[in-house]
Image 1 (tube, rainbow, N blue to C red):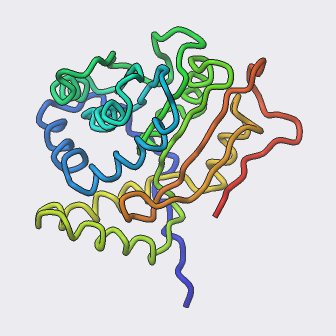
Image 2: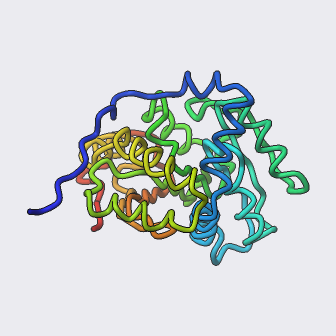
Length: 254
């Protein structure tokens, strides 16, 4: 029998308010679970290579930076890139400042729906496992488009709500390198993210009514041996303001 996609239980729900109120202990526990494991270090290193590879310099914004682990990996891959991060949780931003001690970085406690950054400022914007949590995804995409330079790119790495059971089983295999508590908690944490994520049809609808319509590509990828991810690549086209492009559309690559 073929594997059926895992149902998306809460794709319309967003959790920005809960994250905004996260206490310092919550940020510490999140960092322990999602920032420090060896599997996540591999994950961040692989994403950093995508973002920094072949790039001499430029400005990069990490949306939903959490405890800042990805920014450190990008700095390790290419110290010439100017780093910026934002997170809706002040506790997470404080945690990121601790983790990024010694790394030049601009960190702000803000929502991606409305930031204080200048227009046409960033060469790259990225988000890892945060797009599906945004309170207003459409507003977030408009803001990313505003702050990107013409020709700039955004790379979102998000859990695929249509991940099959076969691919979900890769979680346990990849987590064998972790300590016992993380091996027990990790699969539940990741499965919850998958069920809360967007389906391909929902994602396409959001993207096709964004300023990135006609300049979006979505592909399924594996990170750190876990096959649950979508890589959403967006390009800001010169002179584009908003709305879908005539004849445009989002392509989903297998």
